[in-house]
Length: 383
Image (tube, rainbow, N blue to C red; front, side):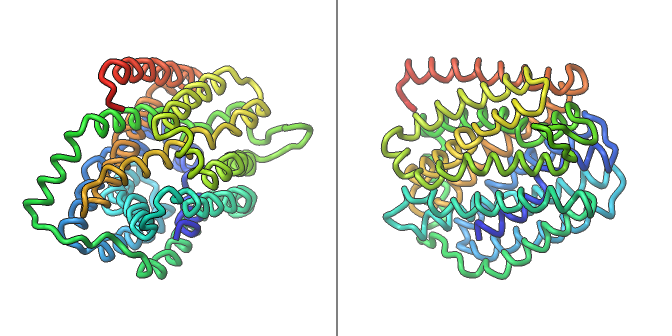
C-alpha cells in the first residue's frame, strides 16, 4: 500500500507547481491559493473523517472512499483550464482525501502490534515508491507533457484501491461519551500541544521545499539546465532532485527504530527543525543548480525524521480506540495548518521578494520559531 500510494503521489506532487505555473498559467498568488486551500480544508476534514472512523468503526469504508475520490478527482484536472474550477477540485481533493495517509499510518501501527518502533521499516516502501517515481516520471514527462501526471497518479491509486481491503484498523469498542472524553484528554495534554506546534512550524518550512523548489530550479536553469557538463530539461532535473531526496531518506526510514531509541522524539524533531531552516537559507543563497542538488541530500534529515517521530509520538499518546484520530491530528497540524500557511505565504512572498527571497524569509521564520519552542520546553519541561 505504501509503495503504490507514494508512487502515485510522486507523479503529481513534485511537478504540481510547475504545472500550475507553465501549463495552467497561474500567478504566484494564485498558485499559493490553490496549494493552500486544500490544507486549509484538510484542517477540518482530516479530524472529521478520522474521528468519524474511530467513532463509527467504519474505518475500511472511509479509507477506501478516500482513495477512490482522489483517483477520480486527479483524473479530472487535465480537462480544467479555469482557476476557479481548479480551486474547486483541489478543495474537493482535500475534503474527501486528506485523511488517506493518516488512516494508512493508523492501520500500520495497529497491525504492528507490540513492534510499533518498526514503523519506519514498513514506511520505507513508500519512500521506495516515491524514488522509483522520481526516476521514471521526470524522464517520461519530457515526452508526454505534464498533463499525463494526473492520469498516471490515478492509475496507481486504482491499484492501491484494489488492495485497500487488506488493511486492518483498531476496532476497540467504546461508547460515544468515552470517545469524546478521550479526545478531550488527548488534545488537552501539554506534550501533545507543544509537539503539534513544533509540527506546524516544521511544515511551514517543508512546504517550500515540496512546492516551490521546482520554480527555483526553473528560474536558475531556464528551459534546459547545465549540471556538471550535462544539459537537462527542467522536468528531468526535478526527477533527479526527487531521487536524491529519496536516497537520503531511505536509511533514515530503515534505521528509524534505532534513531528513536537513541534520540527520542524530541531529538528527531530538534534535528528536523534546524535542518529545515538551514536548507531554506542555503536555497536562498544558491545561484547555480549543483549546490541545490547537494542541499537536497539533507532531505532525509528533515521530512523523514519529522514523519517517523510524529507517527510514533502520536501512537504512544493515543487512548484506546483513538488511533486514527491521533494520526489525524498530526496530519492536520502538518498539512492542514503548516503546509497551508507555508504554501499561501510562500506564494505571496514569491510575488514580492522572488523565489530566493521567499526561501530566505521562510528559513529565518523557522529558525526564530525553533528558538521560541526551546524556550517553552526549557521552562515548562513538557516536550
